[in-house]
Amino acid sequence: MATKKNIYGREYLAGKATGRDMRSLIVQEMIEAGANLKTGEVPRGVYTKIADKFKINRQSVTNFWKRYVSEGSISQKKKEKTMLGRRKLNEPDVRLIEFIKKENPSITARELKDTLLRYSPASANVDVSTIYRTMSRDLDFTFKRLHRPSGDRFTPRNMRYTQAYLDFCQTKRPHQIKFMDERIQISHCKQKLWAFEKGGTVY
Image (cartoon, rainbow, N blue to C red; front, side):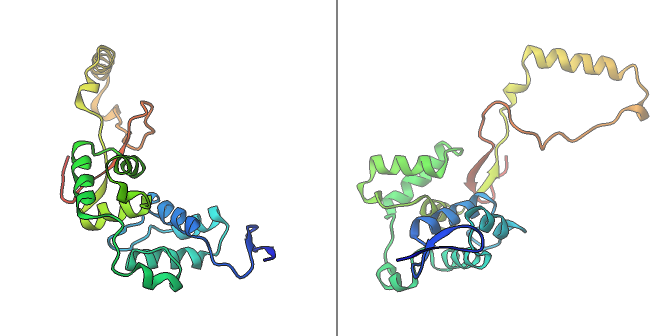
C-alpha cells in the first residue's frame, strides 16, 4: 500500500483504517482531558485539541469517542460481531480493582493494569481504556481532586510563617488587607492530585 500524507501532516496507508493502538490512545487522552465515560460529555475544545495532537480529522476523534461510550469498543465495525457478548475483565478482576482503589485511591489505571497482570492471567489483553471504563461504569468511581494531608501544614517553618503573617496583619487596617485564592497552584511535592473515588464521596 502507498503511504500518503493528510492535510494535517500525518502519514498513513491508503485504504487502511486507523489502527487499534491509535484509537486506544485517543480514548485515553480524551479521558485524561476530562471527558466523561458515563455521560459521554466532553469539555469544550477537547476534540480539537486531541485531533491536533494526533494530526487527524476532528470528526474521526468524535466518532471514536462516541462509539467507545455507546458500545465500549474501539475496534473497527467489521469486527463488531467478534466483540459482542465478550468481557475483557471477569467478575473477580472487577472486584480486585474495587478493592485496590479503596485501599489506594490515587493509584493510576496503568498501575492497576500492572497489578491485574500479576494476579490474573486473563487480563493480558486488557488496555487502560477498559480499566477506566470499568471504574466509571461498573464501579461508579468518579475522578476527584486529592488534597494534601492536614499534617503537612503544621511544620515548624509553616508555623513561623503563619505567626509572622498574623503579626504583619496586626499592623494594617482591615480594609487594607486583600486575600487571594491560591488553590489553582502547581504541586511541587510530586504528590498525586487526582484519583477515582466512589460517586458521592466527600473529602
